Image 1 (cartoon, rainbow, N blue to C red):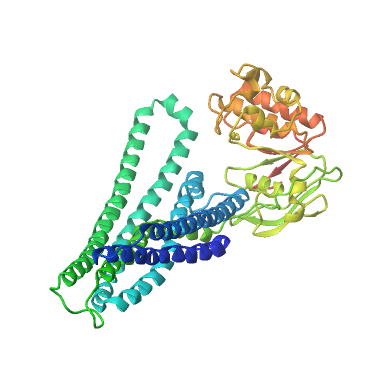
Image 2: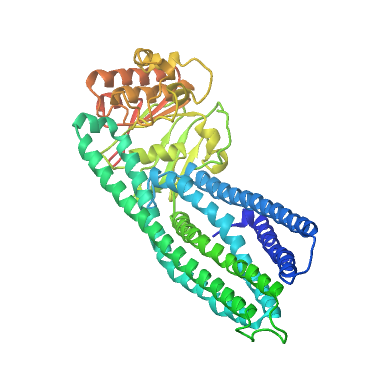
Amino acid sequence: MCLRPGATRLRRAAWVSVLASAIWPLQAVVVAWVLGMLLEGQMVSPYSAAAIFAGLGAFRAALGWLVDRETQKAAEGVIQDIRHKIVEKEAVRASSNRFGGAGAIAALAHDKIDLLKPYIMRYAPARTRVMVLPFILIGIAASQSWVVAIIFLISGPLIPVFMALVGMAAKEASERQLQRIGTLNDLLVERLSALVDIRLLGARDQVMDGFADETRDLRERSMAVLRVAFLSSTVLELFAAIGVAMVAVYVGFSLLGVLNFGTWGEPLSPMRGIFLLLIAPEFYQPLRDLSAAWHDKASAEAVAQELDAWEAVDTEDMLGTGAVAVARSGDAGISLQGCVLNNQRLPDMVIAAGESVALMGPSGCGKTSCLRLIAGLSRPAQGRVEVAGQPLTDQNADAWRARLGWMPQTPHFLSGSLRHALMFSKDHDPTEALEQAGIYDVVAGLPRGLDTRLGEAGGGLSGGEGRRLMLARALYKKPQILLADEPTADLDHDTADTVVRGLLAARAAGTALIVATHDADLARQMDRIIQIGGEQ
């Protein structure tokens, strides 16, 4: 698991936590000295002892605060770094992959990544304390009583042994739970995208029943994780309690004179006995902290396994660097030569600047693939794409796309208002683009006009209205070239005519058109038809 962004802070915090825990034996000395002197009938001033005890406690609390702050910042740094990598990679991903859909990716980047936080904040410091403090306390105990040291040596290792055994079951339960969370998120995204269709088909009850079954399964898996956590905590607390009880029994019988062994010569004094009783719980505390954080480790390892699976999936990235680019004027010729995409050989083509072209052919022949190559949304496995007289590369793809308008076959809106979805936070008046797309009256009739929130799937709009809004969005920035993917597919005659008029009006205004279509009437109105899957 990559913790590099917070590794330095984490190491520092871990050793500071060791120092904070090592203060308690000093406090125990103060308490044991005061009580031992009182039990022996000697007068002591409790004020100086209380001041020393309080001072050590304040110092320990300050160190604890420092540990919490450093581990918090370390966790935030690691999570922010991983989340940034996920967003950065997914932002340029050109197609879906085997890992999962948008719901699974969102669950990984948000809910699941947050499960690393308790692991980073608790497990790493606890592990360092376990590696240091028990050995220090065994050495201190051995200096006072070799019997107590043996009790520590025998009972202490039992805790990590049982912790490891239970931890394996906890890891498996956590993995099953995380997988179900990702599946449920994907299901939710799919159902929300089809919400209008679900209502029209009257399938609400079936969808609700499906969600109920999925959430019931997730609840059962979550309870399985909790059951394992409860079982392990019970077992570990039992061993710690037995260890402390054995020390208490030995100290009690030694002070009563029943036991006369276990010390180095002289009998166990009340002060030393109280001191051993006070450090006994502290010996087991790091082991208990580690056992409590062991479940955080199990969850974090399950998340790390999903991150590895996500990173291992080969994804097709769109071209570009993500830099803000300004559209350039001049030559906008396009050439595809010997291109292969998704094991599909595409025809060679040359499209002159300003030319309007229809790409025609049967479904699956590669029309959309050609548009994606032209836009730099996909990289050819073989072949060469040239735009404006030069190869299309990462360095010029952003500037090239700034010259393009894109009209997808399936309407998709950004989360937010319609104004934001159409204008991308720009402040120019979209009226011209809306009128050109024949959708101005529809937008004006919405409850809040351009401030209406439609949702990502354009809920409340018909398919034709959504398609015309996609056209308006493409026309809004007055592109030099408009790429349209099946702009009239599945539309009624009147709506298709409105979309075609909008496209032709854009061409009349100087925008070149490249249209992938089955619509012969639309194709005939272009300058040229390129047949894909047949002769040009």
